[in-house]
Image (cartoon, rainbow, N blue to C red):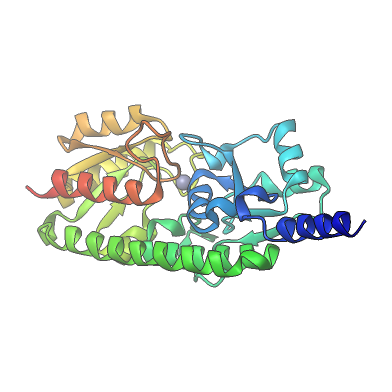
Length: 291
Ligand code: ZN
């Protein structure tokens, strides 16, 4: 009898000391791929993260599926961008009817204005991405207090990488001749990048890919490219590439390559992580605008 009790006690002790991997992981849903990457970097082995809008998806015009409703209902934590990026989200949350905690990753960031609306693309400044990471770290710690120290350490090492990336971006853009630090891209996704790193971006469509540019908008942009000698136009993975190609043909501005604005690629692509995405963009800009 005493031996059995001892065994039961030993079993209870070993269950209590189980490593994090064997415990139920924190179930986190992120609205789109870039947020999913931040959660992965901070949560490590303690979280299972799924994204609603996956690689190469367009978060502006997403239509949630019944499977998404279940994902949100089952999640402990839902990570969203805010600033009006996920216009489809309130209905999804209502349909899920869950008590899932929601963290807005842009909390504490002063939004740039795009017309009368907030520009949602705050992650395009690496300095803002550092605030996203701090917000996500704190939300993970609140949902899983036992993991708080792990999240703090993971965030600390990831933040050090982001700070290095921010310096890399500043240096790369500063080496482009000042008169050539201007470009045009598919939709107005680089306002925060422009403000942080000092490069002029012009876009034929607004901050959402939903809007189609008018003939007048396009004529205005073509005139602007000619008078300001804008050296290059860039394509994006989302949005319609045909317009950029047409503008390139009509103005003689070269097509400088593809930039990643609102989504990562899958593992085999050029931008499977946020850090890869920013690095790809600065290299593409630097090589197209250098001379
Ligand atoms: Zn966008």
